[in-house]
Image (cartoon, rainbow, N blue to C red; front, side, top):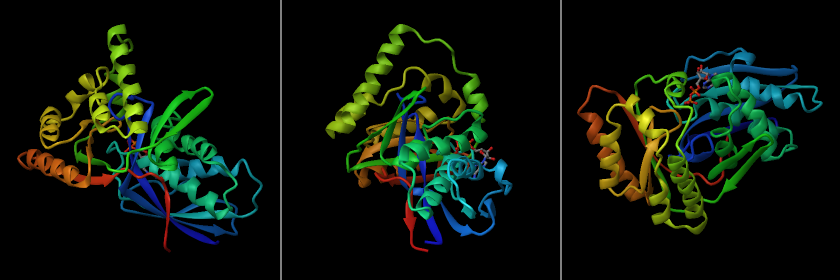
Length: 308
Ligand code: ADP
């Protein structure tokens, strides 16, 4: 194989109760990438369409992730990468992670899959370190592994793939306002009360159990974040209205996607997810805020090869 075309999915990090540990993979929201083997050693980003991002290998998360991978093998040639961006950077649905994950997934395919998914997550995390200053896995893990993922530990890295019920759908709205990840981190408190911690880990356990048991009601009850959402949501206009409207339209629950400003809602079935999208659309249509809205099945496989 000389070239591959990749679908690089968007992802929802945190998923309400799972701040910095849970992630969920989207199916119809994502970038595309074409990767070709080249005789010139190294990684060369030759084209970026749809966003104003650096072509310089060391400044692009795709380049940094790919270089981390190349360091671990002896390969004489190199790779050319074209990125077709559809996920807006800073939207909160893993724009940088899609590029980091897509690059290492595609190169692994071209090399005959020498690396495991767990190893690819480690390489992609190096790309994420460029975007956010820290090598976090909560977007790259679901992008590479699909479904839902739990980062149980960073030292050592222990990422667990979780099953997702087949009718689990996400509705994601991106109100196009700027919320800097640094700002949304800065407002967080450093301490939590024991009472809130107990509620939160109860919900994480409940959510994970709901995924294993295909128990949508349990998933719904567990989609509650008592620690981060009450603080961060003030940065997102109409957050409460969206939450109420989603629930009224039949959603299992909702929350902030990543560090925002995107808001996600989970539903059982495409029909409900679309009704939730209609309800959210009605809220932002009456404002000056431009927005995008998508519904997507939860993607059980992660990055995929597309026909070239
Ligand atoms: P998101 O939360 O949607 O992933 P981030 O804020 O984490 O967005 O990442 C976007 C940052 O990463 C921007 O500063 C962007 O310039 C940088 N970046 C570098 N390479 C890429 C890339 N290939 N795709 C997206 N963002 C990139």
